[in-house]
Image (cartoon, rainbow over all chains, first blue to last red; front, side, top):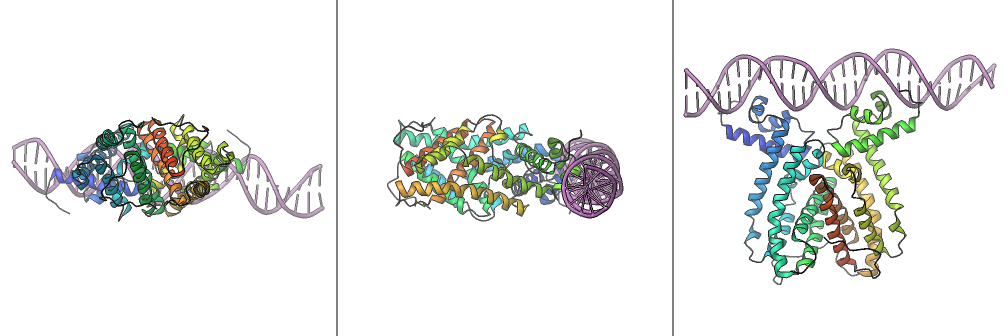
Length: 212
Length: 212
DNA sequence: TTATAAATACCAACTGGTTGGTATTGATGT
DNA sequence: ACATCAATACCAACCAGTTGGTATTTATAA
């Protein structure tokens, strides 16, 4: 098991392993050895790069946030000129991701914060920060769409951004409980329908409604 | 430290302790000793009543479901004659519960299933079953309201029931992340608004809108 | 009733294995 | 040569679960 020394790659392998194993087993149930095995390195390497398990958790959460930021920042719906289309495009994009292995499409931050909110303050804060940043990006499009289509509506764009993430996080819980994304997809359908009531229905059929 | 032997009470103390400690720390991070300490009994008593930690978890989940069933079954909104009022009354009731200690108003089942879905099949199934039962009760009122106010709508009552729980579960995650139920309350406000678009706005002002 | 046997409820101490983390040694790149 | 990086060996604390026994309750029968 001799690989050439490559600090950056070893660190990255540990972060990727943490991301995958924690999403599958949860933070507390994941041991340092689990992560080392998944990453193909030993404990010596682990504690060279991270001073504790919690520090690794924080780093993994930060990396997950950066990865999500890049993923959604590059997603095709961002090219829509109408902000309402971008908001609905985001929901459709997320619905299209609900395929394959459950651990691959669920959110590391939501999973983790639920376990550690009362026991690991720094890790909790990292999760909160990552989720809030994602929502802030989303909120910009919602705000722009609101200005255009519902400037006098009583709801705030930010609260809608949080609501969208709330539905997503809840949807992941049911995907896990049912071992099946069907219910989650249906909930995103309801979310989409609600957003249309807030912002109005786009004219062209860029999106297809999915109800049920 | 001598209490009279009372099998039912000891068992009940263990279940209550499990409910509280697991909601605060998560299932995996909670040790059998944690639960015994919180319940004020020894490990001997624990393993007399439950053959394993997972069995206790399953029993705690089942008891939580029964407790919720009793709580919501006896809640005042059930007395409303109009099923639409009952559905909205449920949401308002849940919003009114978002006060005090976080661990006291969050859902043991949602918390647990997220951790164990891939590693503890029986516990996962118990969580799924408990949530589905609760939703089935809810769905009855939704279905009745649909018959009356939106009989030809394209959505199913069941999918709306799941959507309502999805929002609640997601709301709990943000209450934990933010250490604060504000965002959760706002999300229930959005949920309520959506339900009104599906079922129509009640005439009398039994409920007060909260938009934020 | 009451003595006694059997069953249940409970306890403190212990066990084998696991945990996060450390100390030491060796390999690698510059 | 030298600092960085990673492997091995190791540790004390902790884990779920067991043990062997005691206290209490319940069933039985005289």
